[in-house]
Length: 55
Image 1 (tube, rainbow, N blue to C red):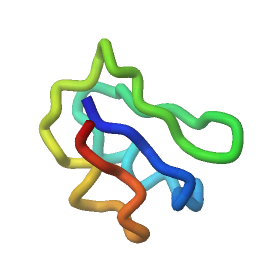
Image 2: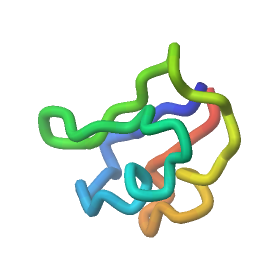
Image 3: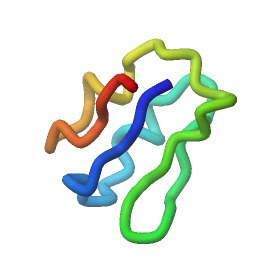
Image 4: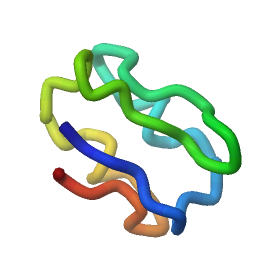
């Protein structure tokens, strides 16, 4: 699964790109549902701050 670090600026690009809707807005940053994430990397590719990392 992927994780979203504190570098997240809550722009929503990752959530919009996720094909399985595993990303949702959390407190202060977006969060990845590890059980739903398919590790496709789409979120990591579109993140403007590099906040999305493979776990």
